[in-house]
Length: 537
Image (tube, rainbow, N blue to C red; front, side, top):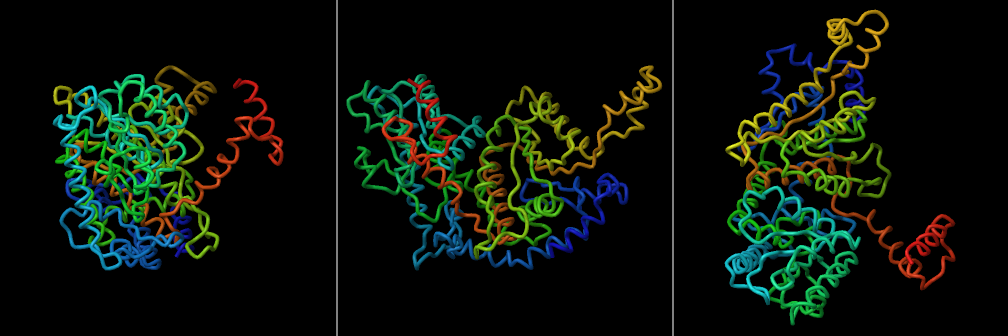
């Protein structure tokens, strides 16, 4: 099927996307190459996909058994084969669906019990029943890294209009500047610290946790009384001094980058309240239900995945820009970097054989309109094609500034339109001739103003960024990553590429501290250690 897809892409590669609209009534093209789920719309009509290409891509889903793999995931089969684990983050948002059986046990019973415990704790904090040693909790610091940080940090910023609880802060980097800047603005007597580490051994997280505990201990008699843990390591959390009532565990079938839906989302729940958090889960659950039953051509995650496969594995575009026209989604591109690149950044298939096609694209981006004044220059006129994914809401939360939100919408739609349409040399020449230029200078100046166009984009539109909609968006991308990984035949749920650097960093710790020599280290590392020792004294 890959050969057929590449042959077809080669056949249509010179075709202009705009011509696909001209070949039929424009509304027909837009409608035929869009998918809805609830009130969310995915428009992928500004790509070079036509019905034949789409059918070939859907054939790829069928050839690689994606439907069976999808059912295996939802049913609790150990699809994370290198670690022998099920992949059941969807069970965390299964608020009232069918039982999910794993080893003869319905896991949703424990999931819902933990959710209830989280809600009780969050309400106690928000209503002032649980206090710090200096009074009502005013600040919550979430200390984690990777999925234990990116998810709650992204979602808490995204849902800022719904905040009616304590202020939330996030610390992830072992760079002391990260934790120091947060501690500087908090009162230790009224701060709750949440330590998010499944094993309670993650070196960056535990280093920051000990720093926060020492900071709090300078002001209160019992700093551990203002700590909670998101961990399954009960002995380690107890040794740290955290009351088991404030420890919220989650199973090994929840991967870090898929964990926002459970205890890792505690900081978000404290910020927006249990009811809004449940609405967040409902949005994801709705996307789960859609993904499981919708026909492929009407299936939003599947079609978003197929567009990505078309651009990356078939057309050879190595990067993907995620461009939310919503300032509160500023952390979404970083969140999706981890989701996509840690999940599908592999080089071998499940059976250990080398991949025959490229794996995940490089995912990057920033909110519009800021990006328009930065990297959009490359997207419009650079020599490489960068497929773009725009996100835009019909309305913002600032009702009094609706006219400004309309300007935001205009910018978003203008960018996707400009990427498709471009500007020809003839049009650029006419513009510059109208300014009085002639001859060689006219030609030179006109060439600087040519936009090649024919650059693909998709747009995800929704009424407003609510907890429900954010749940839809995140689940949409989760399932998109699953489909891409299933087509490639890789395990999207391990991350062995993270391990080697960790191992080397642990070994280098004593060397950097001057407690061990540089024997056996490469010359570059030895030189850098020497330089940094001298300049760190």
